[in-house]
Image (cartoon, rainbow, N blue to C red):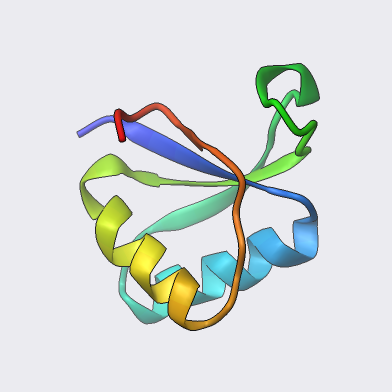
Amino acid sequence: MPDCILTMKSRTQAESARRIAGDLRIPASVVSVDPSVTRHGCAFGLRFSCDTAGRLQSALSRKNVSWGEMIGARR
């Protein structure tokens, strides 16, 4: 499955999301995102396998960790 990236406003948010992904045993890493790629100029993101997107987004919502866009997958 290809990788997806959830964009985030700060490295701190991305690190929080990475820890939540780890709790779910979803391999993930914090990456820099070119601000021109997103509509909101987000500079960080969380890279993970697209097949885990639903579980990860649900967990982030429960923990009140916001994200911007999903890059690399159809919604």
